[in-house]
Length: 336
Image (cartoon, rainbow, N blue to C red; front, top):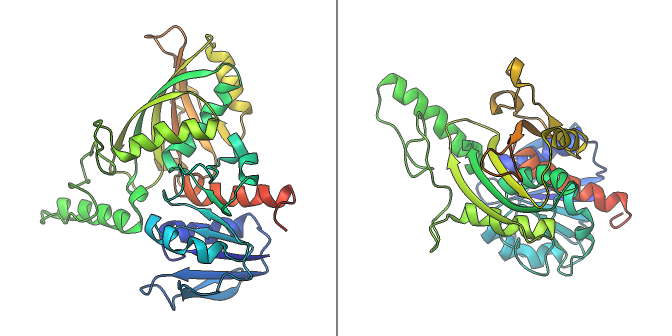
């Protein structure tokens, strides 16, 4: 199988290389593509040296079976026709096509089969905060239909890319050294701070990030569920966290919820408050599952539950989810 990675030098592109290697994904030939800045860079994959090629409007994707793209929405839109022209499946990590009616938006634990219906040859990877949340929601949905979700996200610097992670580390150093703080990747200094804005604000007062959670959750879960989100950037390096409140049609006991989560695909129940055992990003970076803890009844709603999530958004929130989509296509014989 011939596989391509577009945006190979970015944080998600590098994670694609690690995930594909770790999961022994079937690859005969690996092609790496990037911008003029990264073209010519060499990476080693399974002992073989691969050189990043300049992404161009040509026939470089003629023999590609699956292309993982993570170079931003503008690049995805510009090159989608070139990538899919000869039949390659484009699994796109950007926001370019997520809400297009003729592009499936897929989280394999929830709606893997949607990936089989892709008239444009494109499958969209959802937003990272949506992915980790719907994996947990799916377990609850099997017990009783979820009517509404309220969520507050605590999103690490890694959500804004490798340069943002580097800037956060440098900001901490600058603050502790008494130097002027450099601010480029965020609206404000992130070190020793939290910023209640991710992406730009829309007319209704919600940010685009928050509206992604509203719209994408409906599409992935094939549901009328209503989601109200507040997304906050926090000064941790990697892995996002979320506080979630759900309202279901029928009341669900804490015991039933814990059992459903413990049996859910892609989930790990980490919920032992007496021993101070609950998910934290410091300890879960680089892990594949969505970790769930602090499961409890919502004191303000008899049909409500509350819980806490942590997941590595570069892995499950990006590269891993895309690779799992490809693995599903191979498993069912849709891609050979």
